[in-house]
Image (cartoon, rainbow, N blue to C red; front, side, top):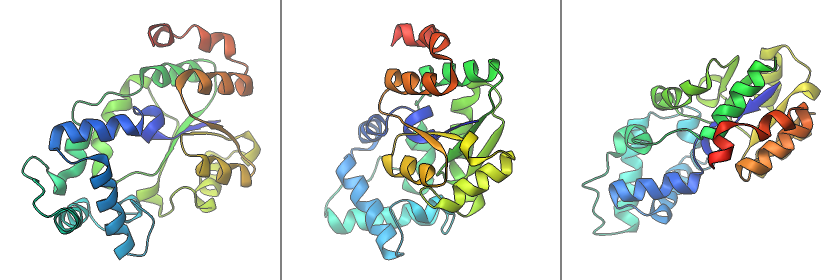
Length: 223
């Protein structure tokens, strides 16, 4: 079974998402990342964990971001930012990674079970689900904000394997963060550390025996 991360794998790279958000709002990636860290530090949690575990609402998180941005960057212009409905603006105009959409379809057509294992936010589900619709039906979804664990917590990998009723050694995680891949492997999973489309497909092809099929993905020839 192949478990895909959403952000940075099924979505465009995170650097592209941050750059797109800066164009929409004027808030730089460094400013935004700093504000996210401030809000999480105040709660004694890793960055993004408060909303990815649904410990606070998106609106509360957004107000915290605003406070941190104003405190750290006096005079910053937040007039274009809709921080209390952050996800709507973050995903606005963003399309899923077409190569990974084709890969998901190829896997399922080959009879391989596919799931999404993601650290995500309750209020963002409508936006990211719409993005991944072109991939077709997903067999299983493990979403941090619904289950109360987030990667790299080993409990989320144990829960995913139990939910799919499959042995850990039959699970493969495709994730853009090395720490998540390492945590999955520590639980007996295999992992593909996503760096770019072609590298990920090479590694995934070796694990699944679908190298030839992946080489012929329509979107890969256009990438």
